[in-house]
Image (cartoon, rainbow, N blue to C red; front, side, top):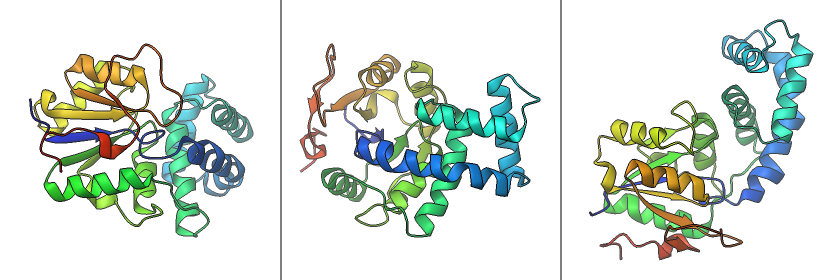
Length: 229
């Protein structure tokens, strides 16, 4: 069945994983304590701190204990929603101040630009918050890409390795699931999307994943879309 919509991961797919691990995560870890202490009374931050206490199963945890937990989750790359939301708020400050500039692979930028012009529906599904996703593409090193995407999805939709998340996304898109192509570097995410009925393609930016049954390419311009020229 022909492809009409493309759903893409970010880390390791459109964006070098090193940018996330070596730049974004350390920036968030460095800035988080002061940011949380300064903004703890803000409604959004206060709500995320309470969500973090629930995740800790410590509703009575004081602010410093919550900060310690958040920093531990960053160090362990935990996919915890309130942490991801807080990271997005912190990164926004970094982008708007000019301290951060987002990495996007040139082949990803060129192909996404072309697919948008050709009329494909473009969407993003990442473990990072929707806010963080929009910021990354808005402040991409090649220029603002954020308007190319029809919608963004994060872990509030569901876990990336569970098929139900992809079914929910397809329903939200209002596109037949078999017409959606999901792009990722992670085999288990592709497995889940395939189980939900999506077409899949694996970006192999480094070491070739083992035990993957998905079509593999090294660059976006190697992804077959039928009429893509």
